Image 1: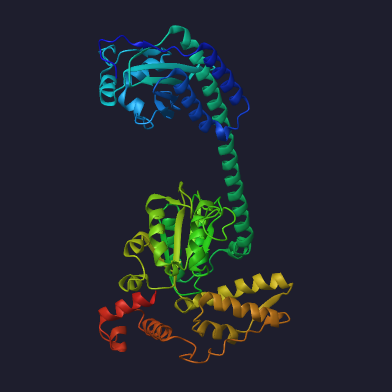
Image 2 (image 1 turned 135 degrees about the vertical axis):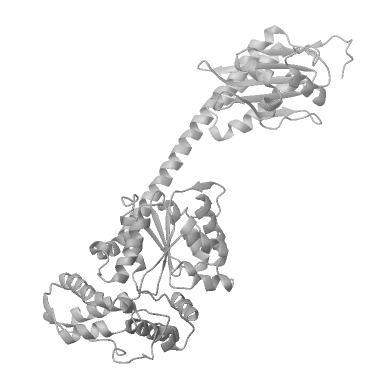
Length: 523
């Protein structure tokens, strides 16, 4: 570095060589592909440093809001400092304001010549050893676009006025190339957004086609007039118009999916398709991609981007059936979505935000799974915001005739048949049966009967366990549930006291109440 007493040396590049450099770079950037702009700018900055015998050359871009200057391209000789992105604006406010006003910054002896208001700039020069600097603001279509900066660390230099317009022309070659690059990137982003939207629409249409049968089955709504089903419908009506997470509990076949559709259909999101995921039907290796999506190449065999079902459910409802079967390693990611509404695709770095209302369902005892370490406690509490227990069919025997006739009308119309009556004894037998498979089992029995009956009077063949008090096909839990429910019905749900259900069953009242909750028995 020169001593302070030595006069600064003028920057005197060979005029012919500099004009040749300007012509070569201008021609080089004319038809340059946007993907190569950044690389070529870096190489051009190196050529400027060598042609002008300076130490560092930089290109600074104006931020989108027009308030910052960001160092985006730079080349410096070995051993000299390089500025990280955004370093200029954070450390040098006077420098930024001057350039954004369109004024050239040219100083040969720094930091001595800098104005008093340039305190951070003086500190920057002292810490890095920068002695001379020339920065030329660049505009495109009258708008500040970038700035070309040249610096000297080894000795002080004078910036001849006749070279500044030529350097500005060179800088404008760069800035025009940046404009073309940004336009190409904007087009690519727009095309990517269109492709993503198209993928979401196609995925939503696929879900719609798959779900159309289920939607048609649900068009009559939930059938029943029993106190048990009315209580459940009342709770569903309370929560439907909110965005609260709902947890549907109950045995297999009780109609939890139909209840989820009922809640969605009464919500403000009813104009959008409810997306359904059966967590038990997907292998653990695929369920993450199914729920959250994947990028191309995320794993072997991932040949295309896949939109996850949470993305499809944005602005709508996602129904997570059999939530108790969700692998433990994915429960944390689901919890993150529930709490923050964001996730990342498998193999993708971008965070995706969604507004999806979650309804989950299970026939498992999640509280017991939490105790056994098979289900996350924090996820259980997050799902259990508004639990609704869908009663088993044996707890609503009075609804059996209504359900039977609803299924008869559905299947008879599909097969072109007409049924006018069902025998009284047949209907009584159907109402007495315990229905371990619940509404789903009843529906299957009626469908089979409609197929086998020619028309007129429906003849129903009950399952072989219909006349057995404790069917051998039933699990011990199902037998307990049936027996306790029968005793409760006999005593009109009086649990405590003389001849109460607890006394009849030989249990403490608190033990019986706990077992009633565990077995999902409802009045």
